[in-house]
Image (cartoon, rainbow, N blue to C red):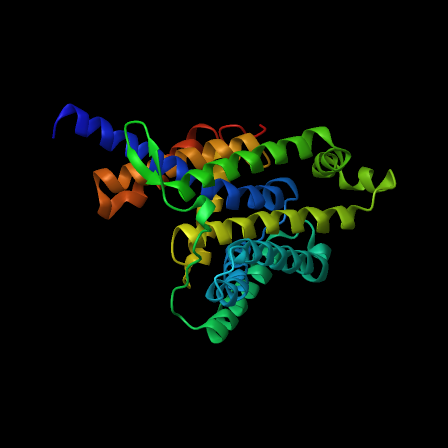
Length: 297
C-alpha cells in the first residue's frame, strides 16, 4: 500500500468515526439530559430509539410508496414526537415518584424496555427496516483525501452540531436551563422558589426522549433498523456519558467522538475485537478521572 493509499484510508477511518460519533452524540445527548442532569436511571433509553424508528417507519413507508418527496420528513417528525410522548408518559406515570430511588428506576425501566421490545416485535415482526433519505440529502459528496462520500452521513455531522449548539444555549442561556441546573443541585430549594419541579422534569425527559427519537430515525436511515439495537444504543449512550462526564453537553460530544473514532479504528485494525478498544478507553477514564473527562468533580 502506497503513501497516498494509507492517507486515504486514514482519512476515511477518521471521517467514518466522526459521522458515527455524530449519531452517538444525538442519541447520548438525550441520555445525558435524563441521566446526567436529572439523575434518572432510564434503562429504557434504547427503547426510545426503537419506538421512534418503527413509528417513523410506519408513517414513512406508505408515503414513500406514493413517491411523496416529504415522506422522510413526515417519518422523522412522527418518530421524534412518538419518542417524546413515550418519554413524557414514562416520567409522569412511573419515574416521577421514584426520584432518588435509582435501583427501582433501573428495574422498572428494564421491565418497560422488555415489554416494549416484545410489542414492537409482535406488531412489526423481526425483518429489518430502513428509511430512504430524500433526494436533497442523498447521493455522494466529494471530500478531500476521501473522494465520494455519502451525503447523508455528512448531514449527520451537521445535525449533531446543531443539536449540541442548541442544547448548550438552552442550558446556559435560558430560564429553563437555569432551572434544570438548579434542580440538579437542590430540588427542594427550587421547589420552594415556586418552580413546578415535576413539570420541569417531564419537559426535560420529553426533550431527552425526542433527541433519542431523532437519532432513531437518522440512524435507521444510515443503517437498517432491527430488533436488538435498543441494547446497543443504551450501552453506547452509557459509555459516551461515562467517558465524557455526566451532565456536560461538551463532555458528551467529546465522549461520542472518542467512542466513534475508537470503534472505527478498532474495526480497521482488529475487527474481531474492535469493541475491546472502546471499553479499554472507558476503563482508563474511570481509573484516571472517575467523573469523566469534562464531568464535575
